[in-house]
Image (cartoon, rainbow, N blue to C red; front, side, top):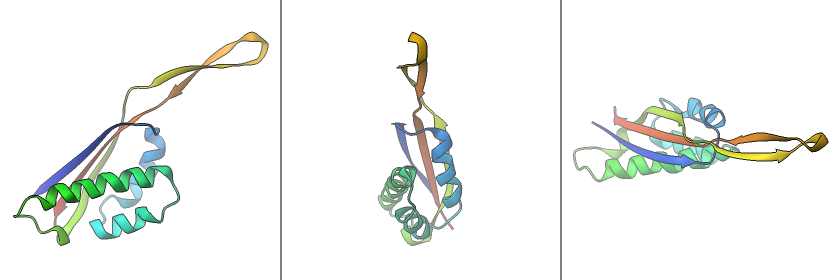
Length: 110
């Protein structure tokens, strides 16, 4: 049986978040949380919170044993972009895209 947790509109680029997600995909939950806790990336803290939320969601179901959970799937999808302008040389301005992410974590029993 599987459960999932979703975090939307997170202010980190999907490319940077996918680097961290690729490390913990397929791990059991305890190892994944420990790995994320000591990883020096901003995305690690965010993804750890979503994994912990998925485990808490699974804990609400009596049929699921929390000790046997593993990270079945992590999806990092792009969200809407905040469009900003930055002054440049010779009176010009260029557009800066501040990207957001939607993070989905699915955990399942082994």
